[in-house]
Image (tube, rainbow, N blue to C red; front, side):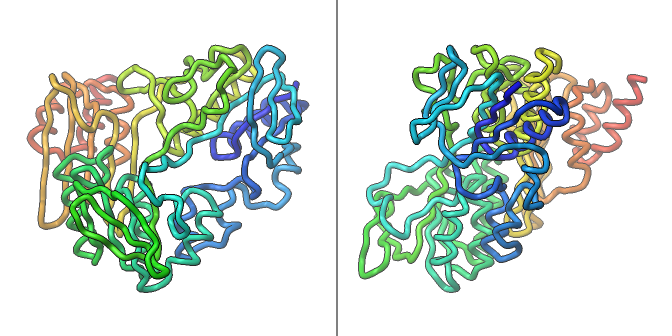
Length: 415
């Protein structure tokens, strides 16, 4: 049996390891489109502040890890898949057959439609090559413009501050991290960053970037211009599915998969940021571009590649945890709530503490928080387990901090 895995991120590496555990005799090929050993993109900010070296980003630290596990790693890009003859084609024109195929090609940064985005000194922060280019320019006191204050932007933000850069963040939405924080929490996070010397411009967009006297001139839609030595774009990501054109693999925002993470084509599975799988909270299908989901996808997809239809996937819980200069923000499930549900908010504006719980009937279905770290695992457990709260719903509405009591009381009521 030849298992081929396209994509050497957390989903792909986890899948290869599970395949090896389940099928000791199988041939396993892991295809990476980058020249480096498989690495974690989430480790790049630590590289930028010299907490780790490049090899510290590698997903597996042993130099011979993949050969020792009889996993053949190939560093080449895939340009097409042909499900009819079970083959993939590479950029050099060669091809490779497979018996089972896992597509774990992840996502790529969205390039904002800004004039001058291709100029030298304008970079994304997604690959190790990007990190090298940023490190060469992000020197102490360098003026840096960060375009985008979403999840990825806020991770990069901290590294730039630690490098001593003079940072301006430009976000077109009305708050920071709009996909995980509401107006109140996003506003608190903005004030937190501003109090640490960062200029944060919300409701603002970049119109144009131009070269001017060996610097970059960044024109904003409010009429102002910023002179910078470096511009970094972090405007979101999209699933890597373009190479699937003509393959007859069903796609939408990502590859559409069933409860076994199998596509509509026999023997072809998808995992990680490229898979549009079941959403635990809504029951619909969505791309959940977070590492815990990628790892879980890899494990489940690999299991079903070896033992078809043996392990069903219950769905991803929308989950984000972000540390921005020491302020922890968290969102779970339907943190934005729903029209028919109840909610409760606890706010300590002066201490940057915020907790928002969202209910659907007697179930806790979503939550977001800022500055709260205690019992966050319990909070996630209450949402994931779908435990009916009973009397504990009213008690949480009266005091949202009673999470541990609510969990224990609700679980014990079922015994």
